[in-house]
Amino acid sequence: MKLYTQISCFLSAALLLNTLGCSDNGAHIPAEINESASLSGDLPFNPLQWKVVTTAINKQDSSMYTLYGNDLAVQYARLNSKNDYPSGAVLSLVTWTERDDSRWFGAKIPDRVKSVEFVTVGPGADHRPSYLYQDYEGVPLKKVSTQEGLVPNERAAYLLSQRAAVMP
Image 1: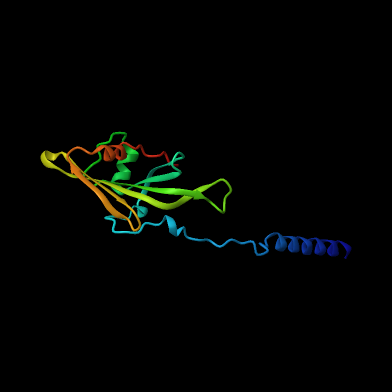
Image 2 (image 1 turned 45 degrees about the vertical axis):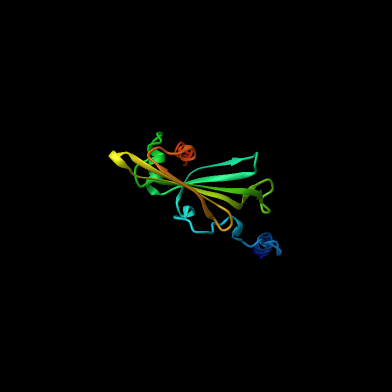
């Protein structure tokens, strides 16, 4: 009987400690959506629904960006190191200002959207590709420039030259 009492007391203590140890004592922080980082405006595509090609931060101007691609662009970027994307490929660079993450000391998260850029590769004359570059800025996002041609402009060439990040 003594062994039964000891085991019972041990199990009761373990159950009590487990219950207390799992209690958040009101310290639970509810999840929240980062509304300031969302895209608003009349964009031709929603790049946040695409896959990530690569990301980077710019500490000098406290910004971060993510290069997204539609399925064709992402497949090409992950398998090729060249910049000659096929017709139908679309890349989009979303740039945000960054802010401190209140939930993780030292971390930065996207804040306000600075710009959204698109490069669309289409069929051009003589079976050569054509490049459409579009830049959107402001709140809500509005088109501030458009350039189209058989040769990508400087900014479009930069976006097309970005290498895909190696992902597990």
